[in-house]
Image (cartoon, rainbow, N blue to C red; front, side, top):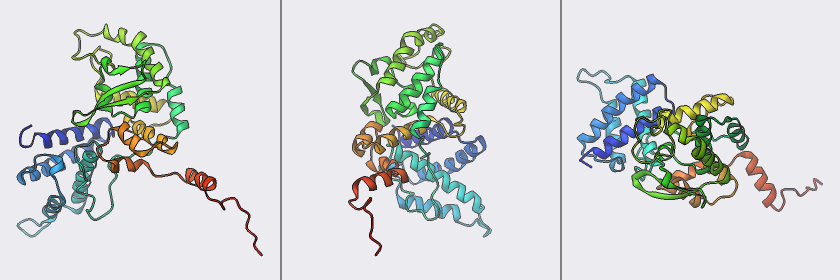
Length: 318
């Protein structure tokens, strides 16, 4: 890549992530785009070529520039505008850390309240069961949508990884999927029986119908096709998942990213080793995986009562 191509690609991916996976409102997206365009120009002036090159001094210099007065001594930006620009910057660097585009988050020491950067609350296991059980029908799109939801939850893959799957990447007999992650890093991900069955049903009776709608063969051999027979896009997948959530009362809560988080959270709650989950999700740093290790009060109490020798011992109050 050129001198700032990696940086430009990261900003473009972040905007797509905000729109297609986080479902950010249009007005917020426009404001973030404007703030991050200025931030990108600042980084390029400093000679930064990739998101992993941004360090804490660069972040501090950007904050100083945001807060510096204009030539007439007045504030260059209103406090609310500065706060929003900082939120946009934190969102970008949090995204880069989670997606493996950077090893650290240089905004971690920035003062003030932290801004969430895309760690939505996981669904409960019952909510997932309800969601997957509600995606019925045997028409091609219904089979595809059911396979998408089952695969997202079963594997924890990113939305970009899901829509990038080709049929050669599936080994359903062996119960694994080959995933091409960030930085073209390949990993092998197990896939459970329920998702395999959904994929088989779609590949046998759904995909062939969608494929016949194509005017020309799409590049590669994509697993998931849209209604016109082309490769399903991130935006198309996001709409499918959100529509499924709306049918079971999960409006505003469900996205492909939520299913990824739910997969990781449920595995850890059931005792999976954190490094196994790190490998499953394709995280470059185990620190990224650790965001899923927050234990619910119910699990904490159950573990305590099971493990502590005096948890259930009656106390003599004499």
